[in-house]
Image (cartoon, rainbow, N blue to C red; front, top):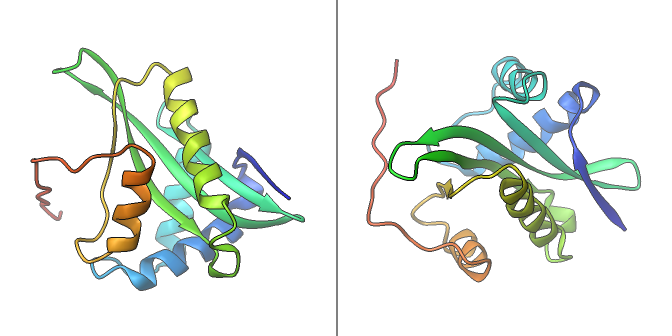
Length: 148
């Protein structure tokens, strides 16, 4: 039985392992323990930035999702960016991903977010279907990045 809870700093090494799984399957990103550790700690230690939710199963982290906050001028309030959703392959298909995502959605509602945005790889049809089953819709907007 898995529980969903907020991440704490002691979770960072296991979270980095989960991110390594995620980033090794995404074409734009590469695992980097030092960078991922810094980013995770930056979220965990500053609630204004966001929150990391984890799925814990028998004392082991088997999933995670980040919720990052910003403000939308078009909506006149707080919105969220959902990032880094990953479930350990050994527990996929057990409902942990849905439990994590539903908790993330409820967390955003509780924190007065007016919208949740996420990105997924264009060729990751399974992820797109998963999010669509949970009420997410494709946007006409396209992401553009400027690397610094």
